[in-house]
Amino acid sequence: MRLPTPYQSEALALLLLRVGCAWFILVWAVNKIFAPVQYQKLARYFDSIDLGLWQVYAIAGVQIVICLLVFAGWARIVSYAALAAMHGFTIFRQWPQYLAPFEINDDGFPVNRNVTVALCAFLAMVALWLLRHRDHWSLDAVLAARKTKT
Image (cartoon, rainbow, N blue to C red):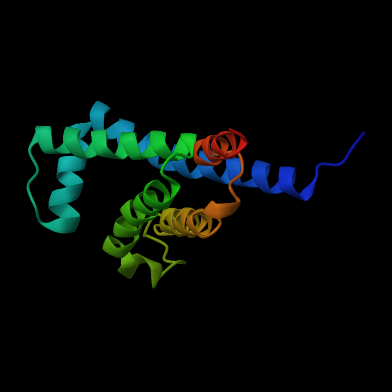
């Protein structure tokens, strides 16, 4: 059995990171389509703004497109940055919760543990953007390799 080359290891690692980061956001984006009222309430609670249903659907649509671009590894500079920025906005909105990661409510439930997961996902998205030039199995890289062969 042959061990993967460093090139193959990098490509696989970044493929997994890319798919995982895109999936993380895609689940939330698709849920905006299935439960738009929930996201209207979240926008009202966190941002003090009222969104119409069409606005929630539009936001979800943009997020889904960005996720699909990231899945494919196309327009890496912009799509990976957009994914990180989109999630970074969520992190910024919830910043006070990061200052109390071990808070327990009256029922004994750790109320801020989900924000810890969100922070890890955001950092993974930043890492993906920083390593985008090593994402050898992205659509951008495959198209560039074909172009240099011709």
